[in-house]
Image: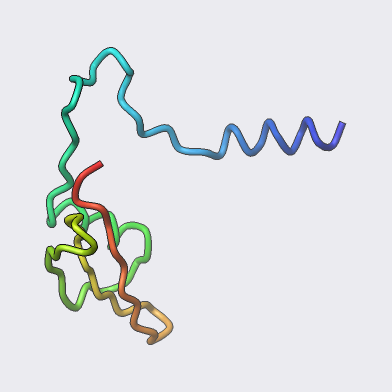
Length: 83
């Protein structure tokens, strides 16, 4: 009973952000703008964004966002620019 309850809670807790398969175009990739990535980091961490830039890392475009957390720690997060 417990494993079933755990699995049900896990499935309900997972956010669904994917677009339906039929809405996707073959070969097309979704772009995440720097502004969208900054907003996502602000919402998820509740911190203050200190800097944000787009870089190329190992041939991929990533957004590098430095954020000051409420406990005083500084964190650097990398968000994929293309999904």
